[in-house]
Length: 360
Image (cartoon, rainbow, N blue to C red; front, side, top):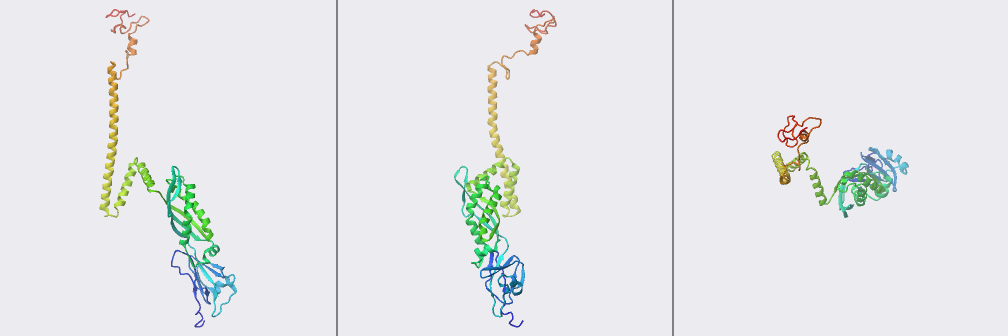
């Protein structure tokens, strides 16, 4: 070609420098003879003419527009470039990547809870992901009237509809109002479905919605901490581990190993004092109980003495059965071993040697 053969040529490309732009429109609407189209990875190029889509090009690379692009367009495929004239067309570049953004409730939402007439104020935060999925709808609703479109505009639309969706799905899937995190996945999946039905109207789809945490009022947080502490009272090993980790984390950035060791020593000393205090409390509770038991035993002992009985002896206690049987008169001509009248040993005699009682 001559010296001035490419003086009107240009390069149609999007030199993307920001990562928050979902689409960008090429600013020179006249494509010259000899122009090239450059598509980078993660981009799609859409040719538009008179407000209509002429063609969509997805493969990355450098292409000669006159020979490699124009023949594949709908209306412009037979157009011829003049020396001084070009083709007036628009080129939209679509960012094909998936965008991930953070979300959070601006103000707590009141969720109905048993025993709380006014409901419980709960906040939440997390992330969601989205991408452009329907180019025709996106161009009709967004790209046709904008130079570019930032992902923050999607975030604004999401947060504006989030509160009623949170109320709906927390009420539906939240099994324990004080531990909503246990059902965070189910709640998030429900919100994702409803959000996607709304945002798809813009040609954008919600690919993921995650709830990282729920925020409770300070009074509820203190109650949860107290319950968690009480649950560890019977597990001293677990309590020791938690206390040591907490001490290390507090002293880890304040002087290195020496401070860590000092912090751990202080923690262990505090734990020992706590265990000693706990044991003293147990002992102080056991002492009155022991005294009460001894007092009750003393009353029982005195009562038995007042009745003329030895301690632990039953009233009207008699001679053992075996001795009674030995002292009773025997039938069949056999003398008892002891006299039934005075208790003297009989030595097999017919009469008692002491009192003269007949034995046979």
